[in-house]
Image (cartoon, rainbow, N blue to C red; front, side, top):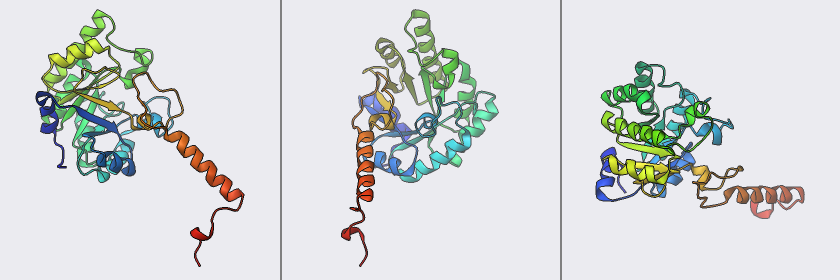
Length: 266
């Protein structure tokens, strides 16, 4: 399998081919995801909730994102690595946006960045792209705006909100993004947006009509304890398996069964 490039991703829509995207936050899982043939690996700021134990993504810093992106990049041979721009890494100014996005490529080894927002961040997105930094847009539910949205609520359910989300997509395409993540939008709106833009759309909680789909890896593997969002399909229950393996280790140690002759040097 050859290295996946941004032109490869852009062509998928015209070719009628689907795009697969998963998050990864460390070298080991990055290797596993890459070896499984996933197209895009997103080093998501979701690491704030699934790795660091925060209740939102807001506390995640640029230095932490670069640290995790470096680990992921070292484990990937084929997938396109994308770094997620964390809260306040680009909102304050165009200069901040260019500098921090550039860090993902220069220090983190990523090939592109993902930016949340539409009309409100178009000037930053245009500046990044003009500086040679490829960008994926992100519309719908914006986790970095959780307080402003009043929680993780589906966006675009009424006419005015749907027009706003659609307009964000069109503005992002015009700014030059090579794909758009749509999170938490009704299936009909996701189809309308997918049909309205020439670039691929990648859905998470956006139905079947997007060109690609993305999930948080820990959700897919069933590693997290809390109830799964409606749009998640767990493909394994590794949390239960891990807990059982650790309990068996504990019991073996307590009952003198580990280490045995096979695990001892003679």
